[in-house]
Image 1 (cartoon, rainbow, N blue to C red):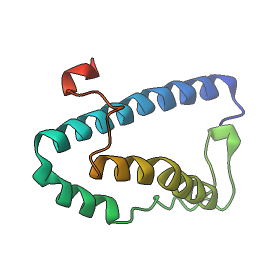
Image 2: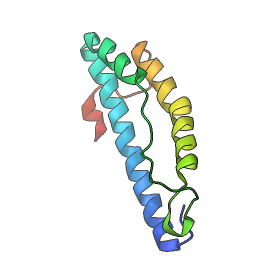
Image 3: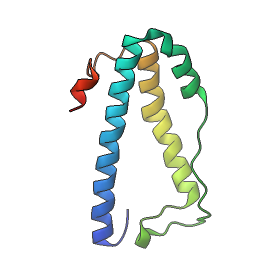
Length: 108
């Protein structure tokens, strides 16, 4: 986060908004895979592809600007993939996503 209180507050708002977008995407994907099971194989192929962070050329973090060093961002990205994406993807691809809404209309 940023050392600037105003920037930190704005970054928190953005993070909350992005988390809601991500949740909606998982709910929609769960519904799509239940509705059209033939999409499981293409979805699995997408999850299997590695995706990396964009290198910004930052050797050190710049908290005054709310920026993390490339190495820190890459590690957080990898942790997120291991802790969130991979377990949720495995549940969705196995058809075990009952905890997610049953229809995209539940997205609100």
